[in-house]
Length: 318
Ligand code: ADP
Ligand code: MG
Image (cartoon, rainbow, N blue to C red; front, side, top):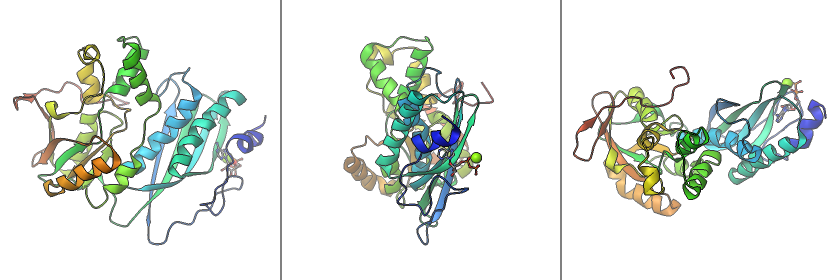
């Protein structure tokens, strides 16, 4: 199977929302009049972002999920994406499974694969995504305001617990592992939430590197201090034994990969956000607030400051 046969067999699908899809020197898209385009890219490298033996269906899903999550965090509606694949070999069964996971999620969100590049090399998946957002409405990291509440779309930590389990750093029982592995392998990008937060929230970020680290990006870009109450963080539904493991708190605060949305909103928006959580069946949790100052501060149940050893995962600092 040569490169062109591979592309046409696995990655050419109808693209009714594009002018021209896969097969030419470039794709053509016609953005909705008056909308701004949100553009983002993410690369997953074998051994760095996923295990060599990962289920290719899950990998296809996750490769797109992490990109969709960036659109959610901007409040953008995802429309199109490109896929750059570096493959060690053309393995039809693997590609079939990868495409199945990728297109299952693409169809759920109505996003179209319009092009890409295919080369041989170490397994690397790079996706660029394009979405639309009304001018001036994107949920930017620099837009938190003094007094804003901090909200989280759901519990963090489970995906990182699955990583610890797979590295043999801890042992989860069957039920806990099933829950955590699902969070790690098939994250659900919060597209509907992100879109609904336009006009309601001030700033947002998707939690990919760890809650405190990502919240730190909003704090820094907005020139404010974030204060989080540990007791108000939503916990993943794991056994008491799992929550008592020494790694648990670190996973909760610094584990990425769950792709929850963290956002800020004025106090007056509380009733609307609670109603939104009910409408979308999401356990939206209010975990702290922004104030003048800088950095991220974590308080224990008595309101005492906790020291933060390592706030998150950083590729060039571990
Ligand atoms: P070019 O020689 O112009 O770079 P390619 O031979 O790389 O074109 O690709 C041929 C067509 O297939 C292009 O339309 C390109 O966008 C598309 N394509 C290549 N790889 C992929 C992929 N992994 N997924 C989707 N489309 C792809
Ligand atoms: Mg090319």
